[in-house]
Structure formats: C-alpha cells, structure tokens
Amino acid sequence: MALTNLYLTPTALLISLALMLGGCQSLNSQPDRSLYQQLGEREGIENVVEDLLYLIVEDERINQQFKGMDVARFHQNLTDQLCELSGGPCSYTGREMRELHSDMDITDTQFNALAENLILAMEQNDIPTGAQNRLIKQLLPLYPDIRNL
Ligand code: HEM
Picture 1 (cartoon, rainbow, N blue to C red):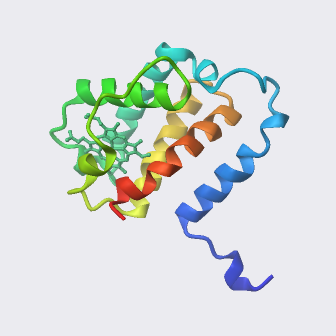
Picture 2: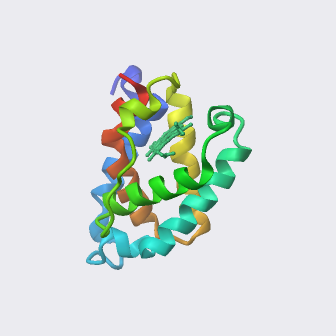
Picture 3: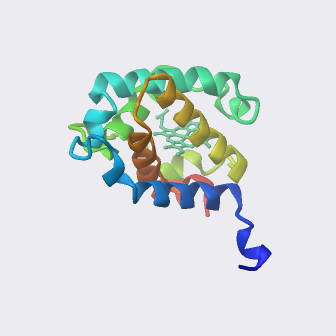
C-alpha cells in the first residue's frame, strides 16, 4: 500500500473508525438492545449532555464559540436530538443544523473536538464502547451541515 494511502485526516479517521467499529456490532455482548436503551434512555442521555457541557467549557479548542449561549436550551435540544437519533421516543424541535452553525466557521479540528468530548462524556457515564460508536455513526451525516460545506 502506498504511503499516501495511509494518510488520513482526523475526520476521515473518525469516519473510518465509526464504520469499522459499526461493523463489529455482532461482537457486542448485547447486540439486540436498542441504542437508546444502551445510552440509558432519556435520563442517561441527559447526563451525557450535561457532562459534555462541562467538557466544552474546559476545552480551549471550542469554548469561545459557545460563549453566551443559552445553556438550558442547548441541553434540552441536544438531548432531544441524540434521543431521536438513537431511536428514542423524542423529536428534535430546534433549528436546522445548517442554519444554527452557518456563521461559526467551524473547522475539522473543532468538529472532531466536539465528537471527542461526546465520546469522553459517554465514557464517564459507562456507556458501552459499541453504543458510543453507533451514536457517533448517527452523527456523521450531520457533518456537511455543521461544517457548512
Ligand atoms: C456532531 C457535532 C454537533 C452536533 C450534533 C451539534 C448539535 C447542536 C444542536 C442540536 C444545537 C441546538 C442547541 C440549541 O438550540 O441551543 C447546537 C447549537 C450550537 N452548536 Fe452545535 N453541534 C455540533 C457541533 C458543533 C461544533 C463543532 C460547534 C463549535 C465548535 C458547535 C457550536 C454550537 C453553538 C455555539 C450552538 C448554539 C447556537 C445558538 O445558541 O444559537 N456545534 N448544536
């Protein structure tokens, strides 16, 4: 394999990892539990989003972007979104992803930083690794809208 083929941008790496690990679901000890249940249902997702907020505040790569935002609304809307994407009985009623993020000039590094913090928050809440990867996989289609591509 040519050396150039081994070079992956962080985003390509994240996507490859999610696809590879998504394909390993059969290795998961509880393959039939829905993703929503594995995340701890609504309450589990609320806890993950709360921990994600603390991690965002500490993260110099992205915290400037979040200055002045409505924390309660963010918590509610992101919880609804993750709940819906994981197959839970919720509906995201916030603004469109592209519209929300259009003026932020979000870079790949910042997108990956948020994904990394979400993984850390799930780790802190003992979410199984297979479920973490399945949720990240659900978020990947949002990438072009959030990056405004
Ligand atoms: C997978 C990646 C992402 C997802 C799923 C996501 C999801 C969301 C959702 C659901 C909202 C609505 C919350 C609300 O109504 O306040 C939101 C708002 C917001 N997002 Fe993202 N986001 C992502 C990446 C990012 C990144 C990388 C940044 C910046 C570095 C960012 C910055 C913001 C900010 C500042 C708001 C609040 C906007 C406002 O209050 O007008 N997001 N995001």
